[in-house]
Image 1 (cartoon, one colour):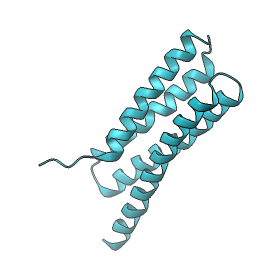
Image 2 (image 1 turned 60 degrees about the horizontal axis):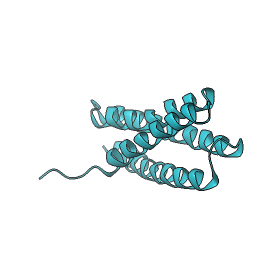
Image 3 (image 1 turned 45 degrees about the vertical axis):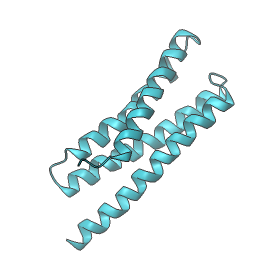
Image 4 (image 1 turned 135 degrees about the vertical axis):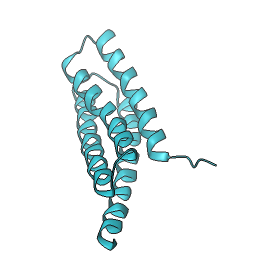
Length: 121
């Protein structure tokens, strides 16, 4: 039986939320620059998780997960900036940041575990 991959599922669901956010920013707020930035970084998290899963080695896996972590940090920044500049409401920011922070914690834990595994092999 296939085991669920939590980070894969969460990063994909988060990417969908980011796509919807981008469409809202572009359509309702006529905001293109910040929206494009959050779209790129927010969808890149899941793309790098997918690449990590298909990695050729433990080091390749760790490298892609590290990129996913960096992209999640960047997305966190853009969400805060969108809120503080008035493009999204506080409750929208809070919900997005909560999901983003959860993803960062999971990826951080994966990185820590993988680094130990690499050191011990």
